[in-house]
Length: 293
Image (tube, rainbow, N blue to C red; front, side, top):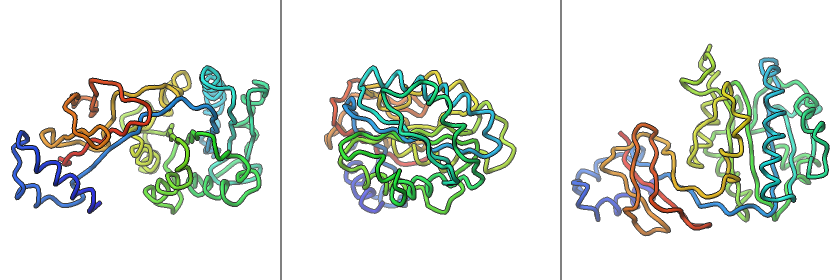
């Protein structure tokens, strides 16, 4: 974070149009400075999809929607590549904790039955379950291919209950999949969503914080999300916007394209989104730095 602050200080000190002196910026605490970013994805040639599903009792009514959503996602994947794998695990690694792998040759009925084939889970430790599945189980170590892009989907009606901090889990994902593209989607209860939040752990805050690293927001589990799941992933193709993770001081916003400042953008406060006036090329890095209100 200190290095990020130095970067933003240098950026802002070179921008007299923002009306901010070096002395003012110097007084800002490191926690008040944020840099959101994304890399323009390339269409995957190979894709491994892992779905981490909360199978606690309160989720039973959601299984049909999960089945339908993943079957529709499969159709969207096949418009891009036929070289894919899809697997399901529950969020507690309770036996049977794994269903899959499914691929282009799998019957649709297998996809529809997969959520029901998982063991009931009351732990809801999705981060820990994915980590242990990938690193410590025979099925998990064999699931991900070294040369395939990765899509990770978390589905839960409560917050992640494990002890792994969100930032540490994100760092592990980045390191684990550093040689390929990876994307993360969270289908959870959100603030002001269609669900009634009965207590503080209903909202999937840790999942929401995780997808914020990828320039996203949580998808409302109580919405008709299954019809547009692919639109929330890098399967949708080219991006020309970034959802900010926090509310910025508008005059402090700075946008960089491959480390070079660009003025080809505008900010829409109603959605807390920076929209680009261009479509970045695959592999281009877009960064948005700002001071938090």
